[in-house]
Image (cartoon, rainbow, N blue to C red):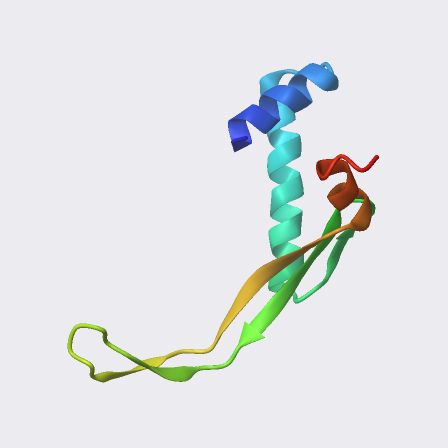
Length: 93
């Protein structure tokens, strides 16, 4: 499913225009990104949790030359699926 597919589904289910549904979807995603930038945890009940994981910097290797290359520390979003979603996807319900 793409973002435009999601916008179409929201427009149908909520009986909104595509422009209004797009604004809703974009606002939700923008708030999620803003929360993750602040290192806040996002919990959506029965769906899952979004958190930020920190990875320290390290020295890697260039596979072509074998030279040492410093890799900077980084933060990456991490999603942990909720039990109810896991069961629904696995058809245990």
